[in-house]
Length: 196
Image 1 (cartoon, rainbow, N blue to C red):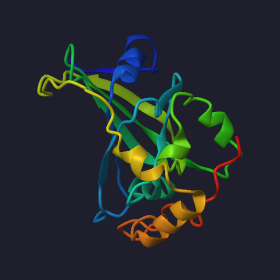
Image 2 (tube, rainbow, N blue to C red):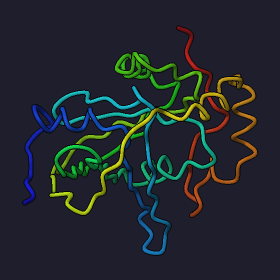
Image 3 (cartoon, rainbow, N blue to C red):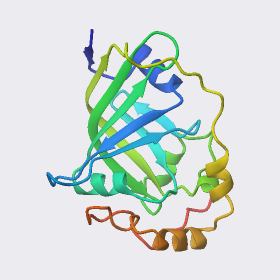
């Protein structure tokens, strides 16, 4: 049923890019630390950079567990499920890195996401993942579900924020600068978005 792939290309890449939602899983090194599992969406916020590298935009929210875990150990798994069409589940296990707004690679990486206005969503990092194991499984237990549209709520909540007010918002949240397990999270103060 399942298969291991050498690279993200062809049918596999087309499947990944067609999905409207994916999930990220990370964990701290501590055996009693909190495992984090997050859904990700927003059309245009994911990109395949090459046959072994993918990236997604990390937007404003009330915690930064994924960022904290990646800063500590880099381990991450991304998962896509077919909710329409033939059943399939694809996982990319690899090493992830949060690239922050003041990183020299920021502009080059951001160019991979031309269809989304990151400033309207409080863009705080770009997560870059290098695949170490790529595999699929049957997905027979995944239900059929249909996609209607992206929710407008995230944009309407964060598009009115400036870099200064967004930084103030992050400072008020308990698990932005530090994870639930006390790991360093998002570096604050938040660097401003580079000028276009």
